Length: 167
Ligand code: NI
Image 1 (cartoon, rainbow, N blue to C red):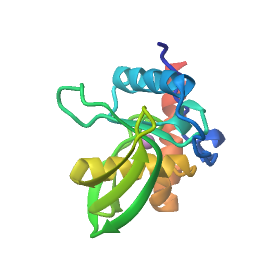
Image 2 (spheres, helix red, strand yellow):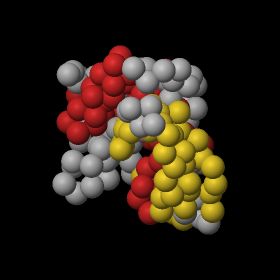
Image 3 (cartoon, rainbow, N blue to C red):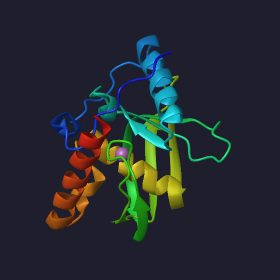
């Protein structure tokens, strides 16, 4: 297993659109292990392959307190969405920034697991937010792009200041 470097906003590679996984094989399972390790080490509750510069439709999520309930979503699709809810979000690709975003309150998602088995889940609360946030990454969208232009400019300025200080 290996820790993978996470791309940071506004890296243009975060805007690439991921392609569907054709076959869930050992190569994909190894990538998933690395993604999970990277997410846990960060630490974070979700990671999309896009964030580690792999442009395939794969997500790992663990919203449990105990950090041992890994959920894998390959080729995820939103089948239905309802309601609206606002939640403060953060992102491993936008370190130190937390902003309120409005999304569907409840989503039903179908996806393959790491064994290539199809499953459908209905999620609310944090899992619903996390699924929508991570699925956005797969189409090249970062959560801050849902905010006003002014807020986005402030975030880019803050992140570049952080990067200069880290050097
Ligand atoms: Ni994110």
